[in-house]
Amino acid sequence: MRTLALAVAALVSALPASATVQMTTFRSASLGRDANVAVQLPPSYASSPDRRYPVVVALHGLFEGPGFLERRGLSAAIDELWRSGRVPEFIVVAVDGGNSFYVNAAGGRYEDLVTKDAPAWIEANYRVVPGRAGRGLWGVSMGGYAALRIAFTHPEVYAAVATHSAMVLEAIPTREGGAGNYQMNAFNAVFGNPIDPALWAANDPLALQAKASAASLPALRFDCGAQDRFGLFLGNADLHKRLEARGVRHEFELGPGDHGYEYVLTMLEKSLRFLGTTLAPKTR
Image 1 (spheres, rainbow, N blue to C red):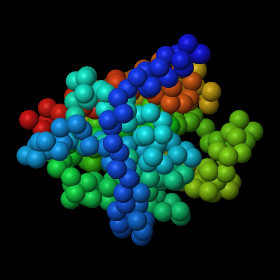
Image 2: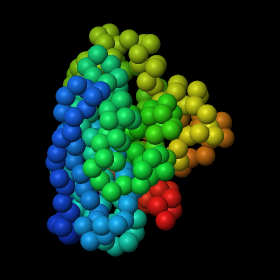
Image 3: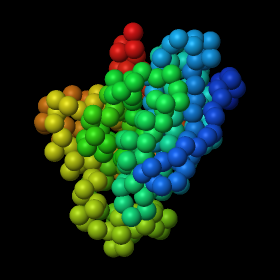
């Protein structure tokens, strides 16, 4: 693991510093207030005024925000993947979900933020391929949980979905089951204290996949570290088995690594190439 960490750190430090991420806000009708977003434009955007691009909406993890793109070394890595031609160009928009799990709950309608407000704002302000065909959804940990949930419940919004270390749990989290105090506080703030089983089930990717029509689902890829310290590889592997049993086409990978951005960076090229190649042909 230390060797992997050093290799990833060396990769990130060697990346060019040309990636620029613009932090901005827009008015969210679903939240009733302004929402924070981070926007990363591809290298050719400024010089290609007649070109329209796919967009990938990025959902961050727990205790993060849209600034995770830069803070975690992702924006520099994405820029290098574009400039080297290993991943097709698209616009990246990271949406601030706080610690909401991107759920429609008492704290705000965050799922609606991702499925309604953000796509509408992006299409009104950037040169993107309009509609589902040009939209991808990408999430990490808490954001991966939300992205999978949206794939199953709102397949009409995004054409492709990719996640890393998605928070797929086989049971409601508890302190006795190993969830930490900070994590449980976040769960309780959204799902109730004690956690409301009905609200949890209504947002559980494992339950929701069974109700989703295989024919209408977006292209789907998800992966998880085989040494994920929260045991999320179990839920991700379970989701893979359930989708496989239903004959739902998808890509799944258990790769070496723990929970965190060292692992995400090792899988980033695969997930973004999956999104880019799925969306890009529809733009030509």
